[in-house]
Image (tube, rainbow, N blue to C red):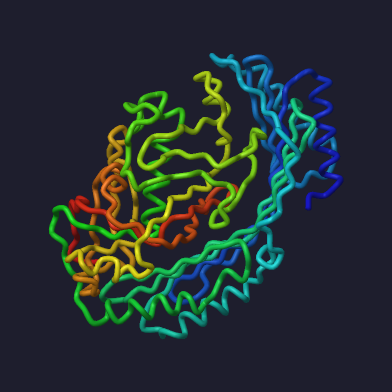
Length: 457
């Protein structure tokens, strides 16, 4: 929990801002982060950080300024310096062309339901032994690489407009390992996530590799000809494409500026398939839950797409002020995205046994947006992708590129798995801000455009 001395210092800064008659938001962010990377079957990086940031945002009329100081909050004078610098920046800033909505903490928040001290203090030796066990199972004939980030994030916010405080403490981890054949160059990947140390199991990764290894060892790669195919997308591909679709189609500023793929639509219009419902659900335990946003607004279940229809648009407080909308609790680093599950069999192979030839692409690599306003994305298979015929795995497939629209992928879904899984979408760079999505373990979608296929993996 946050040190009482630090809490008192931040309240003193709030009181001083009130005396100076400025609106201020004082935010404390502390992270304890450990990162291990492996390459060429051995540890290549082992680093630990314990960082504290103090962010102060000041509003005077239509002027706004911010200042961030990184370092331990050891004295009141240290924190007051941040306030005074933020005030000076504000006074010398250009007026906004709208009236900002003051940050207001709606109630007292104190959250630590997804915190595990064992994960926060996870020893590097635990990670090294887990990697060694996995690598040792398959032998040095393969090349292994990967990364494992773990740690905790602590946030505390006070604002001059509210008597309440907002506090959040959580732990998280993001594990990955890639098995690569040194000559044939194909790659298999396994990932794991969660907020508890016990969420990680080396046996899970070993089992995943064993299931696919014989397919890749015994069969040549298949080159897919450009055209339209029935494609099974795995959870990583679903989550990454979905996240991009939401930020470019359901985010207020892009929508209002007519730059998004839904900008031509109005609330209630059909934008995706009738079996697609998408919710930002901060109560979903498959995600990293956050009950308030950084403006102090209580986050609730927020339906963005309801059975294919555009239901709501996300507005952070600044965008809401610009376009005279009501903030929706989205002044936050990442959502708790949940894509509704369906009735599909838990087994992918059983689900597609009557569909003839299908491509199973569990993840997409280097996803990009050739045309944001039309919702066109592109990405290539790289890991674990296979050709399936009549419910049987035939061979791995060479690096295969999808270039299609969000509306095509989520508008022609034939089967949705009944099972959901958690996918970690956290950014490794910048301040620690854990994000995870809850998505079906697979979706089967028809008529997906394959625009290119390499001659190798």
